[in-house]
Image 1 (cartoon, rainbow, N blue to C red):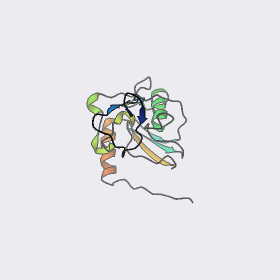
Image 2 (cartoon, rainbow, N blue to C red):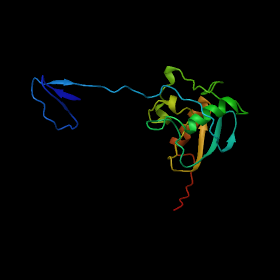
Image 3 (cartoon, rainbow, N blue to C red):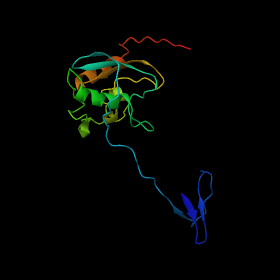
Image 4 (tube, one colour):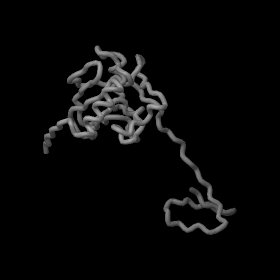
Length: 167
């Protein structure tokens, strides 16, 4: 924000700046460059298991699971959108169409029981996450029913997870 009078302008870069009554503020709101859809990318995946309901992959360290601020591409979800649309012998499931585009209806944009209230359009089928620096097994639902069932099982801690730390 800029603080200006008829003769000068001052950039306001801290919350503690005192503004006097009658001062005119000029506010510049940056444009939102957040993508509105996922771009399918041909990125190799290490697939351990797949059927028509889910896919299980070994995520390599360095790869982000789903698009978010600072990581809009090169993610597992980008790779899955391509793979499911183009290469899956078991079909693309409910979330990806034949062109690799993620398909959602507005009423399905958030799923509080399994996605922490986040929009699922950027994490379709993602049941759980692994940190960027973590290699490990990632289970991804391909259907709405599988997403519901797997999310319930993870939330109820019915899924047994084993961790191995290498230092």
